[in-house]
Length: 181
Figure 1 (cartoon, one colour):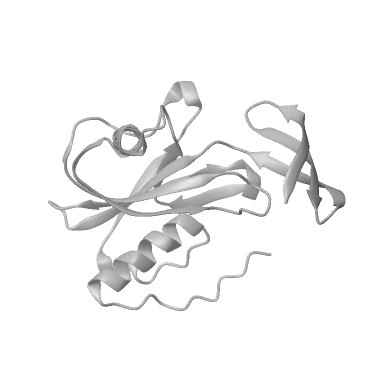
Figure 2 (cartoon, rainbow, N blue to C red; figure 1 turned 60 degrees about the horizontal axis):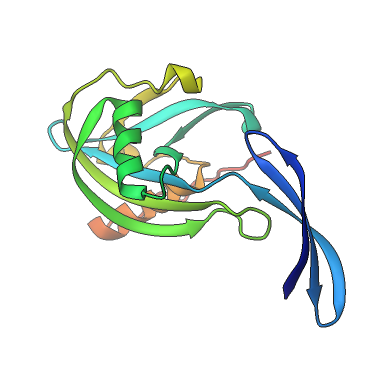
């Protein structure tokens, strides 16, 4: 498969491209959504023995979503970026950071790659809540392991992080009947 031509259809906060693709002598059109790459972390407070999640309004789904701390990758440095995001969103500074997995969110149409981490924190150094200049209104939610294992989630990066945690601790996540209608 070879990309013969690439045209930017829209460029704003995100970019949308139209591609002319050739495969086995046949050409066809495909679209590509570019949002930039991201970072995410499952955050554990070692002092309170609770996992810290964030809840914020997500325009594409029209409501609030409970998820791991996350943000847009900056300076092509996932570790530095996730440390900043954890402090900005939760107010905690990172004590320990462990890489979990890198994955594409929807490679059939989107270029976004997520760098997923596990972070341990113990010291709050700021209020958190996100950055006002980025129009973020982030609420933190702290949950025990027992509560985490009962969550009905709809966010893929959070589900992947919790599956990793469950496998690591020898637990099984509840099989939720989550339907996104």
